[in-house]
Structures are given as C-alpha cells and as structure tokens.
Length: 141
View 1 (cartoon, rainbow, N blue to C red):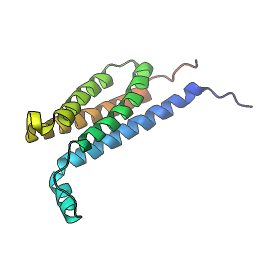
View 2 (cartoon, rainbow, N blue to C red; view 1 turned 120 degrees about the vertical axis):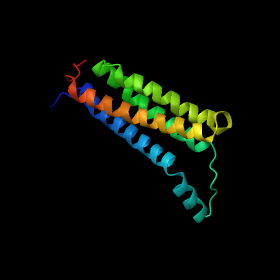
View 3 (cartoon, helix red, strand yellow; view 1 turned 60 degrees about the horizontal axis):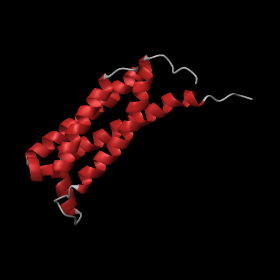
C-alpha cells in the first residue's frame, strides 16, 4: 500500500493553473490584437461586430480565477514577490480596461489597458511557473 501525500499533487495543480492562465492570457491577447478579423468574422457569420463589455468581464473573471489558483499556492511555495506583483499590475490594468471600458477611458485606452494587462498576466504566470520549477519541493505536511 502506498501512502499518498496530498501535498505532492500541488506542483501539478500549480502547473495546471499557470498553464490555464497562460492560455487565457494568450486568448485575451489574440482577442485584443485581432479586432478587425474578429469583427469581420462576426459580420460574416451574421453576428454583431460591436461587442458588449460582457466579453471583457468574462475574460477578467476566468483570468482572476486561474490567477488566484496559481499565484497564491505558487507564492506559498517559492516566496518570490515577482509573480504576485506582476499579476496585481496585470489585474489592475485588465480590470480597468474590462470594467471602465471605452465609456470612461476611451476605446484606444481600453485596448491599451487590456493588452497591457494580458501581457503582464502572461509574464506573471511564466515567472510563477519558473519559480515553482526552480524551488525545492514543498515539505510534506
């Protein structure tokens, strides 16, 4: 019979959440950087080229969930502030673009905030993953 240590599965879960965070950040960046293609596709497929703010709020919600599930355990493991600080800046920028939107900051600023936030979150997940790989395994609890 093998003793199963629940702490031994944490690194795999951190990798999963960082991977999901990288995927969501990448999808967000594609969404932000390719608006002409997306708008054209929406019109071609019979949709509306003008999206509502709901899309950005959904991206933010998924990014926040993946971030919390990756950054909190990651920080507890490696104790480096780099990833959480990058993530906080990314969430601030992404949140500003997602919730303030172009109504408050203008369309160009909305894009700048959301793209910057996505890039910062992508970097934060990559740094978190690298720190977790470099640090010693978590002690069994």
